[in-house]
Image (cartoon, rainbow, N blue to C red; front, side, top):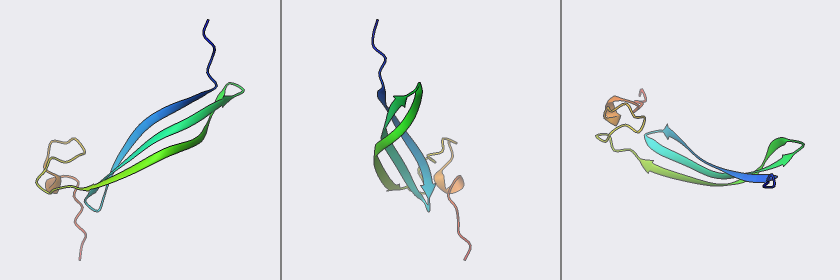
Amino acid sequence: MTPIENSGYVYFKAFYIEQNILVTLSEKSRFIRKNEKWYYQDGDTDIEKSRIPLKSQCPCGSGKKFKRCCMKITPK
């Protein structure tokens, strides 16, 4: 029988577009277990930002070019 761990990690990535910039947030989150419930303790985060070329495929997965899909044009 293996012992039950009382701590663990979760790795995740989240993506969003802000002003034509693709932002990727990565985190390694640490959790501990107390009384059979898991609680978030802390995490190591990394944020990457990269400009999205207008003629490239949209990162949303639509298959369209970015300029025809998720690019937001701000009214003047």
